[in-house]
Amino acid sequence: MREEGWELVESIDEEPAPVSRLELVSFLRRGESYVSGETMRERVREEGASLGQRQAEYLRVHQEEIPSEWREFYLVLPGTVWRDRDGDLYVPYLYWHGGRWYMLFHRLERDWYSNGRLVSRK
Image (tube, one colour):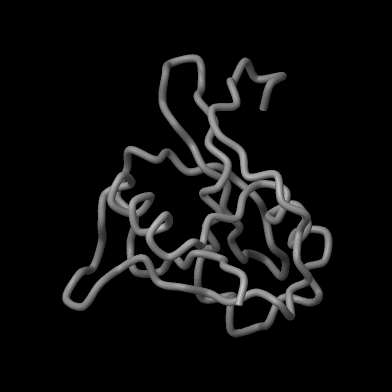
């Protein structure tokens, strides 16, 4: 992302965990269909589910280990935050498409919907 002119704002630099030691956690509460990015990040801090880009990259490389049930969600790893040249903040996520997982970055200021899950250590 640095090559794109982005600035690293925050990064959890933990050693990536094997998939068997991970679980998915919803960032929504009863009755919610979406939350703001800031609300999602607050809940990440509350839950201690703050894995970041190193874990996302590990999952992408070891995607054959990711349970097939996870394919219905996009997997959010907001422990890494990037700022683009326009000042917008982004976090990494993985999504399933065409038989494989891809890693992209989602703008934090946008809403986060029920098809997303936080990746957390068990």
